[in-house]
Image (tube, rainbow, N blue to C red):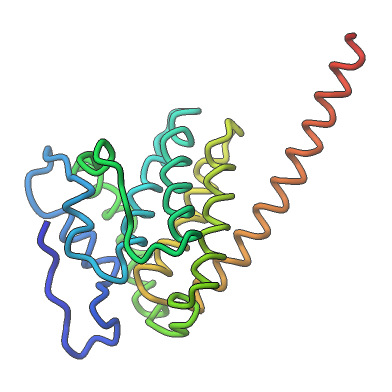
Length: 214
């Protein structure tokens, strides 16, 4: 995939807007299947954001169990690499040669058309330390790793919720917006705490029920 050239006056320093990336991905034969290795090849600072975006897409599949089972491990892969401090995404070959069908990207882009127009008005490159700091990247990775675990769990009706939350991380990474990333941190921490406590209580109830049976 060839990405559109960056505006020399654009403060993104090589990163492209979310809308321009989606437009590039949508251009071509709708039946073609995009390969992750091609999608990431021309990207620089936004490569992790693009990989996370591809990982989040399956979470919107309206099939219980399938959405989280596909998206969760992909989100965990992105989180683990950020946590380890990798500067560029690494993918095993069997994943690198796979990717979404172009028509799925077109449909997703069309659904997001209005939010993306609003996004471009309020989101911009700022607070670069939130994205470039080794410690900040590791913390982002930790939160993504935990959110990926929660997404992978068969918790009913949560794949859309986690998918929307993870899109905030996607936009922050693609748009190089450290302020938005801070907001994503807060939302992520709240989700992890709330669902973590709920899962702990459910586990205790289950163990108590098992004790009663035996």
